[in-house]
Structure formats: structure tokens, C-alpha cells
Image (cartoon, rainbow, N blue to C red; front, side):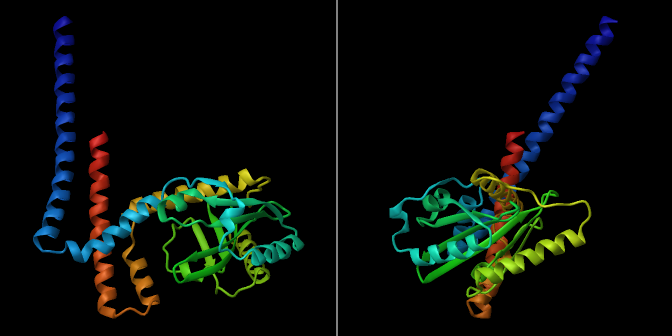
Length: 284
């Protein structure tokens, strides 16, 4: 009996050692793949050409994190913003049953991009639609955005906004967003969003929209969306070649430059995915 026990213990040790060796080999294989790809990029003199795509990957890694931090906005945060537009849009929304919950600044964006964006948050009378308005000023961009968002109890989200400037951005399948032209009025956006909500309920069975009551509830909904976006970006290597191509085409860039940018994004996304896989293997 003692001999059988000792034999089983020896087999267990051998199995454990074999498993560890296999894991080490998998880790080394991923590291070697990363090294080979980085070596090829360097040997072919493609570092400068791939630099914009590499920069985009790094930027997206900072933006697409599981949760964005917020802070209450101050009077100073409204510098350079159109206060008249904030107040006029507030009046329009409150007339339609929305109540104002507060003004917030996204500190994750502030620290990453140096942009102070003040979002005024609202909640519909039935608590199923949250709204944010913000004046976005960055370089040549000067946008007054109004967006409506709702969450279903099946883990999906719908949004309606006048943020057509960001229409090219690839979203996870759980999030559907209708980005209408920049000059679309808040009233028209709300009508479109309400119709989208009705369509969701008509097309799906046993679903309903989640109810929110407080500013914290609205932010928790935003956090759930952000976690989905972060996981999606990590899965694809943080940059989508098709998205890059759409953005280049929207800017009427040269077709050759567009093709090169998309190809560069594909290479850097692939490299980032290999790095992430190697990091996961190392943690096991």
C-alpha cells in the first residue's frame, strides 16, 4: 500500500513538472513571436512608417480602460465653453421632462489628452434614458454634442447623438449608436431615440429598459458600457484597421495613404495582441 502511494505521488510530481514545462514553452513561444515580429519591423526599416499606428494603439490603451473617473465641474472648467448653449439646451430638455443631475468632468480624458470636457447629465422622467450635453473644443473641432443613452436588461445599450464626427469609430456588438448630423436638434434626437427604444422592445422578447434614479445610477451605466468597450478594444489589439480606413476616407485622404494607414494598423494590432497573449501566459 505504501509503495502504491509513493508511486502515485511520483506520478503526480511528474505530471506537475510536465505541466509547468508546457506552460513555460507556451510562454517562450509567445515571447519569441513578439520578438520575431518586432525584429522583422526593424529589419525592414518600417519603424517610422508604423509610428502613427503605434501611437494610436498607445493612446487607445489609455482611453479604453474599464472605468473613467469623473469629478464635479467648477466654474473655471467652463472657460472657452458656450454657456448660453448649455443653458438653452437644458431648458429644452427640462421642458420634455428631463431633470438636471449635475455637471461632470471626465478626469481620465483630462489626464490622457489634456482636454477639459464638461458634461451636463440629465435623466428622463421614466428613468430609462440618460442624456449628456457637452461642448467639445479641440484644435479645429468645435462641437456641441447632445447624446441620449438607454440600457436594456439583456446587457445591450442603445444611443442616439449628433456626434456624426465620431461615426467611423468601431463599437462592440453590445452597443448600438445612431450618430446623426451635428446640426440635429435635441428634439429630433430625442424623437429618434424614443423610436429606437420602441423598435428594440418590438424586436426582442422578455426585455425591458433599466431604470435609473440618481446621478450615480447614470454613471454606473456608463461604467458598464466602458468596461465592454475596454474589453472589446483589448480583444482586437486596441485599433481596428477598418476604423482607420473609414477615418482616412472621411478626411478625403489619398487612397494610397489610406491603404498604408490601414495596413499599418493591422500590423500594430496584431503585435499588440501577441504582447497581450504573452503577458497572459506569463501570469499563469
